[in-house]
Length: 305
View (cartoon, rainbow, N blue to C red):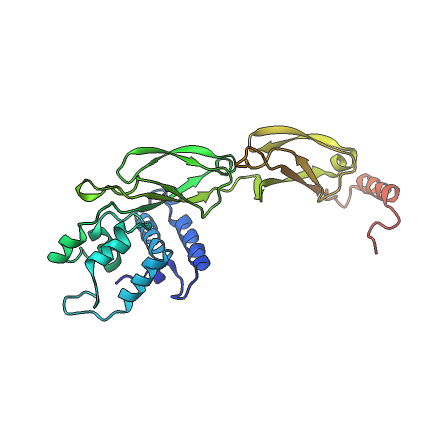
C-alpha cells in the first residue's frame, strides 16, 4: 500500500497545519503551470494531491491508517477489507476524493494495482454518485483581492464558470457542486473542490483587508515633499508626499485595498523607505552640503535617550 505520509514528507502524527504546509509547498513546486508541463512533475503533482486529499480528511485518514497497518490476507487484501465501505469512504461518501474517477481508480491509487477482482469489483462499482475531485486554481493577487470570475475545466471535461470571492487566500478551498467525476449508471455527479494558490504581486502585499506598498524616496523628496505615481490594485494613482516625511511613515490611500462582502474596501498603505545616497570619497561638495543639512535640521534630542 502506498505510503501517503512519505509522499507528503510528513510524520504519521502530523497535524492538519503540518499537512497543509507540506501540501502547499509540494503542490507549488510541481504544479504543471510552474514546471512547463514536465510529465514526471505532473505525475508527482497528482500523487501529492491524492495523498493530501486522503490525509486531510479525518474519516479517510482513519480508514487509510487502519488498512495500512492491517495484516494482509491470503487474497492479498488487508484483513477486514470491505469494498462497499471502501468505496463509500473514498468515493461517493461525500468527502473530497481528490481526482479519483471510480472505485478502481481509488483502489489503484492507494494500493498501486488495478483494483480487486470478481465480486468485490462489481460491488465497489455500484456507488450511487460520482467521485468528488480536487484540483488547484492559481489566481492573481488582484483577482484574489477584488474577486473575479474564471472559466475552468470540470471533472466531465466541460467548461464551467466559477466565482472567486474577494479576499480569498492561498489554502482556501472552493466547492463547485456537481462538477466532479460523472456518476456510473447516470447517478449524481460528484463535486469539484479547488484549492486556491494566490500569486505574489511584484509590488503589493496583503495586510489583513489592506494592501501595503514599499515606496522608496530620495532624501530630497522626503525633505521637500513630492508627488509620485504609485501602483494600486486598479492601476496607477498619484500620491502626494508631504514635506518632512520620515522613513517608516505610512501614507494611506483610502478604499484601495481588498473588497469586503458588504461592498466596502480596505485601504492601501504606502510605507516610506528613504534611499540614502552613497557619497564618493572625493565628492567634497556633496559631503559639505550633507554636513550643513545635518547641522541645520538636527533637533537637540533626536534619539530620545
